[in-house]
Length: 130
Image (cartoon, rainbow, N blue to C red; front, side, top):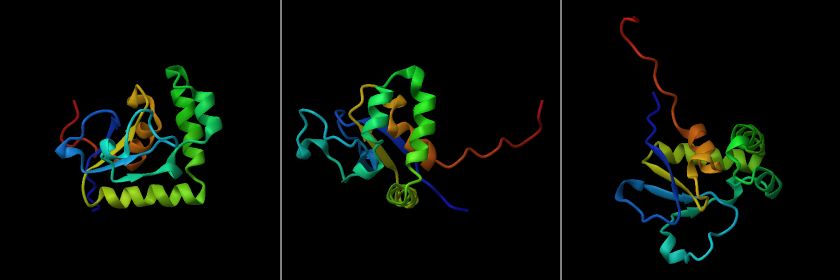
């Protein structure tokens, strides 16, 4: 059985926590007003960011998040992105990951889609069903 650690989603502007583990920025553009020293990231994974066209279409409209996720997962099938995603899955076997974005609502960002792709599926409930 493969053990994977927690994959959290957060905003790059928030202070780092000890529990963050490896901190990865998954935006294509560097966050405004933030120095690289203050970002406290281990890696900037630009290759995993959505394409500029998809990002502009989505515009972080909550009503488009489901379709954004579908289109984004298709983009992640490209060889370079797929390899980077596999690398994140491997990293999650060694410790916790925190996927960071500058987006105001990280729960409807590319980081949330990536987290769902990396996180292990929840095991089925056991015991008698009522």
